[in-house]
Image 1 (cartoon, helix red, strand yellow):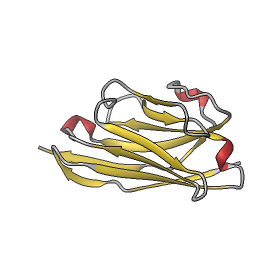
Image 2 (image 1 turned 135 degrees about the vertical axis):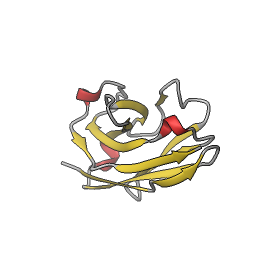
Image 3 (image 1 turned 90 degrees about the vertical axis):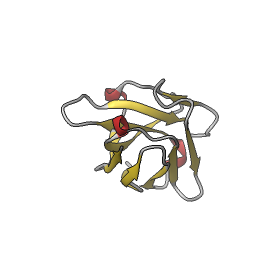
Length: 124
């Protein structure tokens, strides 16, 4: 089992950048695929980016793929999502999620563990 805690959210101006971190507990973190999802008010939770346990596979949603980077440090049990050129429509609660194994999916039910989320607000 793994517990996930997100950090790094806050208020950002449009055009700015942010780095979100997902810290995990558990000795088997390095065997988990980690993904970021986001949920804006009144909308479904949607996939943002994901990274396999080794870091060799990364996937991005079309709306962030040219302006974001996901990375992980298995020694520190952390996954980081960096997003540049932020837009007001990036405003959402950002969640990290985990599933044991190497596949990276954009399908929300694929993931077994979820953090509590961190709020990101982008002002114009």
